[in-house]
Image 1 (cartoon, helix red, strand yellow):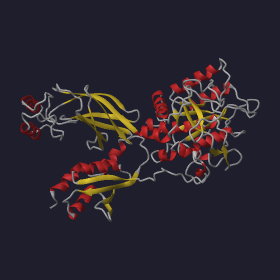
Image 2 (cartoon, helix red, strand yellow; image 1 turned 180 degrees about the horizontal axis):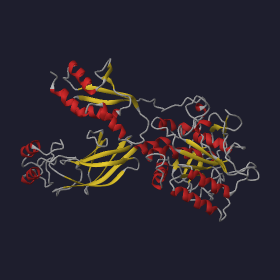
Image 3 (cartoon, one colour; image 1 turned 180 degrees about the vertical axis):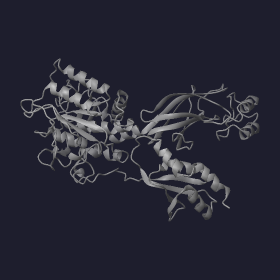
Image 4 (cartoon, one colour; image 1 turned 45 degrees about the vertical axis):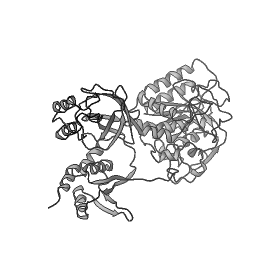
Amino acid sequence: MKPLFVYALALCLGLGQALAQQGLRGTIETPELDYAPGQVLVKFRDGITPLQREWARQVAGAQLVRRGEYFDYELWQFSPYADMRVVAAQLRQSGWFEAAEPNWRVYLANGWTPNDPLYPQQPALPFIRAPQAWALWRGDDRFIMAILDTGVRLDHLDLQPRLLPGYDFGGDASGVRDDDPSDPFGHGTFVTGIAGAATNNSRGVAAVAPKGKILPVKVFRDDGTGWLNDMLDGIGYAVTQGAHAINLSLGSRNYAPAWDLVRDALISAWNAGVVVVAAAGNENNMNPFYPAWYPVCIAVAACNLDGTRSSVSTYGNWVDVAAPSGDVYSTTRDGVDTYGRNRGGFTSYAAPFVTAQAALLYALVADGPTDRSVARAQAVRELIESTATPVNYVAHGIINLQASVEKALTVPVRGRVQIQSYAGSYNGRTVEVVLRPQGDGNALVTQSGTLNAAGDFSVSFFNYLGYYDLAIRAQGTLLKRVPNARMRYPGVSGLNLTLIPGDVNGDNRIDDADLLQVLFNFGQNNPSIDLNGDGRVDDADLLIVLFNFGMVGD
């Protein structure tokens, strides 16, 4: 006869994989797996016999891959389609394991390195800490960067896999438009390669955004002239084609009232949820450059790889961020597999760094490619600007890809609690927030914090994106469920919960065990059992337990 703990384990696991699949379906658009598919590392608590371990594997539906050669652990294999975070949480909840965790991926300290042969000649990418960012997140191919420029070499082998069908609004020398946004100059091809060359394909260069699509929008004529009406139409086209970020490595230092038409078009794009990035100009002064001057744009200056300003870059407190440009390698229009280096330090080549960063981040803050809104665009912009490394020649600093991705993966949960019948100070009282798959009572992860005097709390969860249920308790209360919480940056806020006291031992029910705890501590000053906060465990606390006796938390 199998020992009782095996049956308890079966109940806690919910027969493992079915609930693991349910947990997986409860999330939306999570980053790619950062653990070995279907694998969990377990360490049994002391006293579990080899036979009991075997029974536990059978109940969990796991195959033993190997035992630790030098340490007492086991590597288990489940279905590769199951969410191992859910499975590990179910194992931990059983109480029979000292540790149970997915078999997490380990990275070199320098992050993820693509296999593109020219990547070692792209020092600008390590400078913005791209490899460390890529180790966490490399983007989503359903998110779109629109490059409004001179077009692109459509048959370039390092661009072709990333390109969407675009349009030529500039046209030929006579202005005749068509659906062939080929690049007669090379500027657009170079800009496009910085943002979105095919990456980790054993060819050419790597891009700032290893995943994502490029929408080429030609807004210059074949003779090199550019006109505002073509730019206006290109902006509208990018929005209607589903772009999440627009790159404008173009502009003019000469203001005319007609530029305000472009401003209005860009405001319309922003209102549709599109992040607008524009080169700040190459004037070596602080004067306005259009359209980057308009607040709707993220204006980008150029910096060198030592952090100093490029000698030609426009600068000033109206310029938002800086990005590398003085030593940038990218695709060229000279052939189907050709590359070149820019040493001029022009802001044209700094802007696509930020556009690609915006596309990477958009995929983390949105529920999917159709989830495009001002709120999502604002979250992306805030991530870019708030994580930049400060310098004295722009408002926010030099972009930091790693810091922005890490912040996007960190989801704060903020709110306020009120405890029934509590008259003391909330300040310093413990609060726990439990993250669960939707419709599943099993805890994935728990974060603890403290309340302030008003009952406010804030905790954060890292790399759990999607929709989950939350359960919140303060010290001595039952859990209160918050269903369908959207766990994406900038987080869950405005929670206002009334909690029921009496669960002294934290098992989420008010029963004899809690009553005994109050009786054993009667007359003492024990804050963890002082349910009404009057500084003493007494009749009032006993009455709270009796009044709520039998209640169970969510």
